[in-house]
Length: 204
Image (tube, rainbow, N blue to C red; front, side, top):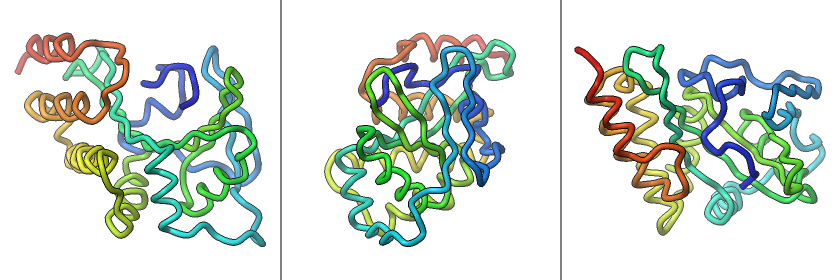
């Protein structure tokens, strides 16, 4: 996965949109650079004459290189004290950039993020509408196997909860925090106990 902040940044225009209200990538290439955030490159995807990716190939590629992530950030200005940011991503070497463009064309949503530090590119989807309406239905029809399938199942549960507004309630957030720390075993910015303490301090 591309280096940098895996759980997003307040200055990242794609990570401050938990309800999926951000617009899709524009038709012509654009590069947005904000502070230390990697360049965000909006692309049309693979050339129209290319052969579309096979759905099972997409699932297999995700099995090896994909990630279902539930990022959690402490936000004092929010009533709940926490912000939830689900995302689906897949990182490849810059030599496989066209493959990521093909993946973007296959799903018809998402962005491609460049990480200059390790010469990788990441395809990423953060919009709840796209995750629930496009990404997850694909994996229901062409399912993953093994541990990645368990991650996808927990991720799907969180996306449904966010759609229903459960992330705006303390009890719902407790469940989301538990799911997030079960499906994402990598390094976290905050220990789970710290986030639960934030919830305990929420009034009402």
